[in-house]
Picture 1 (cartoon, rainbow, N blue to C red):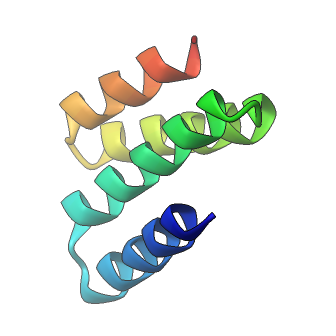
Picture 2 (cartoon, rainbow, N blue to C red; picture 1 turned 120 degrees about the vertical axis):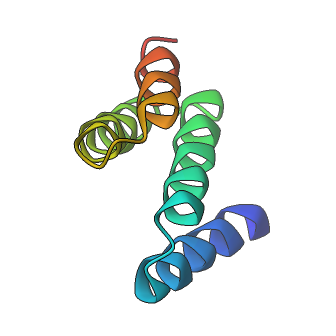
Picture 3 (tube, helix red, strand yellow; picture 1 turned 90 degrees about the vertical axis):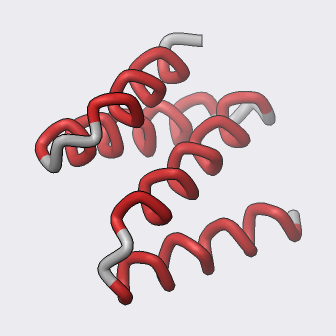
Length: 72
């Protein structure tokens, strides 16, 4: 899927440049796509890791969204 490839590239670029919000938002979108496309295990794994990392870095809203979407 082209959107997934693009989001992965954005996450890598954001991580490389130190832009945490962009990295977290793209990872959240990827996790949501995985969950909605039937890749439940992959989505939950991605969202759980994102929740932990975002919470540790103080991005509470992103962490909450990741937690909520992992439970779908």
